[in-house]
Length: 138
Image 1: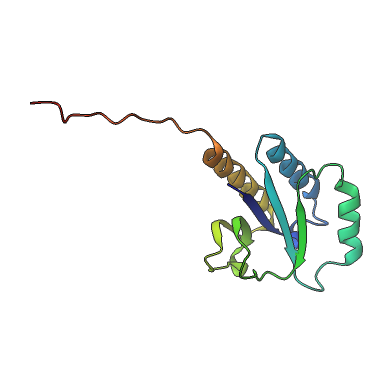
Image 2: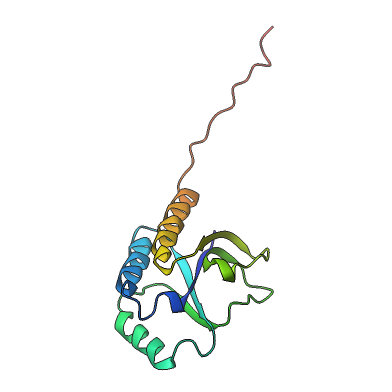
């Protein structure tokens, strides 16, 4: 199963909790959850210099494939396994498996925790329960 996480970059970059979010992303990766990260933003909201600073600052921490795109729209072949998004940006398309919706920017961290828990549950080994047979009873 290929996991992907999508977040709004403007809710992370230049925020007081920016380092905490990057640390949590790395912690999830180190916990055995391999995923692709997609960060999106609206054109003109974030300066290219800020994105460059973010990438240079945390390049040693981000050991997973990261894609930064402009615009919230998904292409027809895009599939997002887990989307962390604001209520006003909710995407009702069928290309998203799980979606965490928040109202306050600080809830992004809660969304990351939810992604971590969901991914660990889906990737964990499930106990196989043997079916009880009763067709030999008279």
